[in-house]
Length: 106
Image (tube, rainbow, N blue to C red; front, side, top):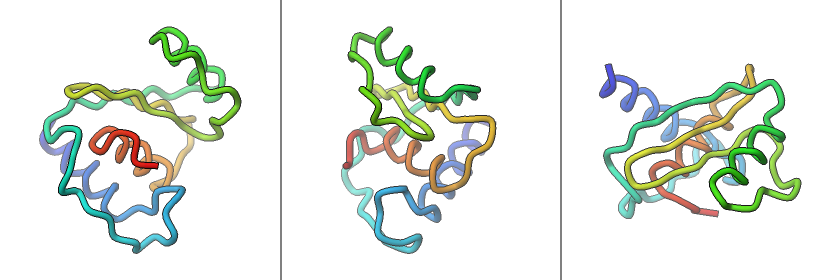
C-alpha cells in the first residue's frame, strides 16, 4: 500500500504543474533528491494558513508571515507532512510533494 501511494504521488508530481513552474508540461530534474524513501502524511485543514503557521511555529521555524495561500509542507529525510485544504488540485498537491523529495527547490 505504501509503495502504491508513493507511485501515485510520484505520478502526480511528474504530471502536475507545481505552482511556480512555467507550464504544466515543464520538465525538471529529479537527479538530486533529498530522499528516495520518505513517508508522507497529509493533513486536511479548514484554515490552511492558520494550520501551516501553527505547524511551522511548533517546529521552531517561526511561521510563514503570510506567504502561505493554499498549502504547505514540512520535510526531513524520512518524513514529510503536507497540509492542504479539504479541496485541492494536482498543481498544489504536486508542488508540496515535490518539496518532500526535493526540499526547498524555489
